[in-house]
Image (tube, rainbow, N blue to C red; front, side, top):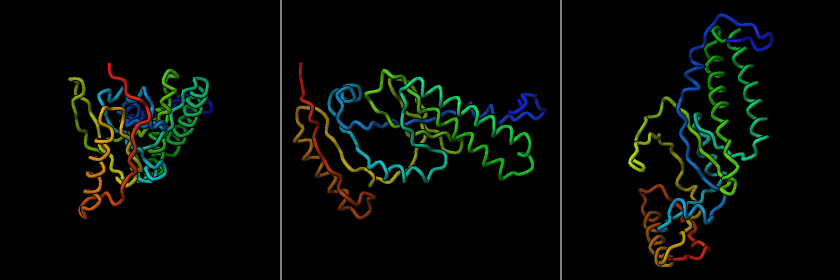
Length: 219
């Protein structure tokens, strides 16, 4: 570890710092665009549904998890470099503090480790500008406590973790371009109403349902 002010090396080796940077991060991607042709084409070319969340409702729900962050993606390379520089400087400050005082105060040590974890996690706001039209918002989770699970995607095993959220933060469901939109809307409304009327289900209010305004082209 290098002392942040003088640049002199100090003796204590914080192995957890290496472990911190090696921790896997888990992402769920959202978009502020609720009816974007490229998204429908990319994720459900045969027809599908988009869930719209009330931004503040979802943020409030996620804020209960200390190992998760909501991140608005930044597509500007100059802003990305500036932000990374600020993160590195902040990490140096925290490491310098830990070198001097961390071993004497366990509570402060854990607090600073958590702050480092969130700082590293926050760098996941960066994305190539080629994807700017997506206006992506990410839910990022970096935890060694949560149970790791696996699913199959394109014949590849993908690890993931689960994060609880309030299902009532779903404010709208958009039905994508498909040949039977109105029929799909009618069936979905019946399904949602059955959930709301079920006292044992967590859904207590009916989300708005609408169909995509993008015309369907079948070739």
